[in-house]
Image 1 (tube, rainbow, N blue to C red):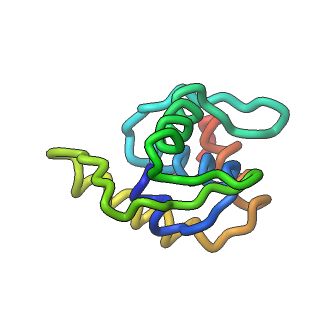
Image 2 (spheres, rainbow, N blue to C red):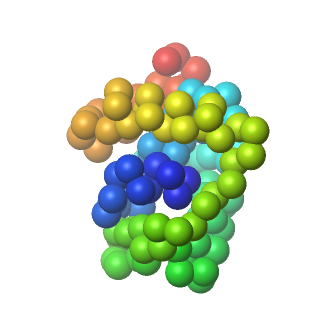
Image 3 (cartoon, rainbow, N blue to C red):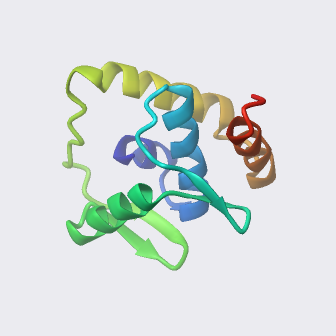
Length: 115
């Protein structure tokens, strides 16, 4: 998540959730239990990670936005690091420039098993 956030910079929590959802699903990691509540993609684990990163000073939240702060933080993906970085690069390259509405459509398609 931190690697993706560094690539995105200041980003809304909703948009970060969509990008991390795509990384999680397209990478086949299935790390988070995703759900759609009031048309917003969310996960208790995702929220927990954001809270922990905020408490440890790795990120800062301002309103609905999250900003990476600590560039020395190493998420330490171990042997999966290259795979995770490749998926993050792919997702941001392919989907990073889309509008929130377009991202919503892709997330919805993946959640429905259509994409």
